[in-house]
Length: 502
Image 1 (cartoon, rainbow, N blue to C red):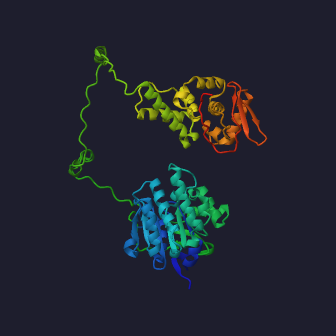
Image 2 (cartoon, rainbow, N blue to C red):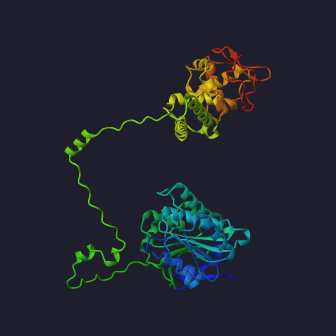
Image 3 (cartoon, rainbow, N blue to C red):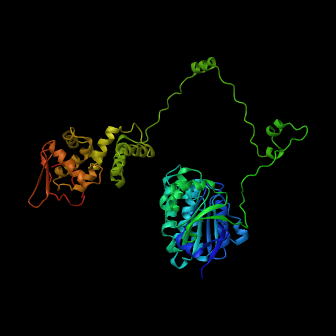
């Protein structure tokens, strides 16, 4: 049995019927400028179909909450948390309750987040609860914008994704999307294109009329007819409405919105003796209780002569000698610990040196290290040493100075690589792998480490060769030593014997 709801009167005086079962499978798009009767149309559809199908209304202005008294809809406030809204939506589908999600108390971005959470809960409901539901979204251009606006990308993407799921994938889950918009040009095309039924109302902007004509299959010259439509009159097209464009007039409704279009009323006449200026500038008795206290009068401003006298009398405070809280050796050990922590941080390889330097300064302040902190140049050098695994004492020794002198002419980004090779060569350890070299230069790319090693070799600071087993050996001419053969594809192992005596 086909269930139809009467939307109003079509041309010729015959009833305009909407096939509800066909609507559940094909979705509906309603378009009309403000004042065209778009909300009146949605209210007529909801009232006529309420006895036959479950309904969910996403209401950004709170206009549809009056359905609760007449048809038993439950009003859900949008200021619940996103997780709560998802759980509420799941229970709505499980118990087949018609609801109105009112978002009038929220700003635009919060409305988008709340709608995305609620629609997501409807969409992710368990398969056993996939009963037919009419999901009406008023002012759909807010939740599926065609272009980025003033809201955050995160909120826009979440809301647009939820609307796309509703219109593109909701049919199999029993969700029949009914979206209404004032501006077709502001509605995302992939959302509007999924609708197969259309009700187009009064439209004045050329770009909106052109899109409406395209959706209805009308010629561009026929698009002008949308300007002549009266309030509450729409052009219907779609398998649930009519196979050809059909003008219809929407019928009356039983409920009304809390807000309505403003009506002209006569201006009040002032009573005899009323002073209009006094009426608006004098607070009423009910306002006095919550009015803020008057601001105190500002202090007199000092004259230039007074300021000069105050400056002449000013004496800077005597500096206070603060005893150092730790010895120099303790401070150096603390600096070495901080540098090792930064070098060992796996996320540090993704940050530029300026960000790591700021992290270093914060760590120094947190540990209350006395004295001047390292400047950026010394920090870069000490970090390269720490990444190569050189401890604080060895970093200042003669051997370390010889290594630093050997790589002094090289760019700073490769010094950590040379230090690690020198460490392995002095200890007679196997040549570090590509992963270990990458870590020494603050990178996660073995390919970049190989390119920098080739650059060091081109500068004469290293000589690379491969033995018959494919292991790599690196010699450092400036130090007169070389590494033992090592697998370049091996794990990033730590060589032992850092700058150790031979």
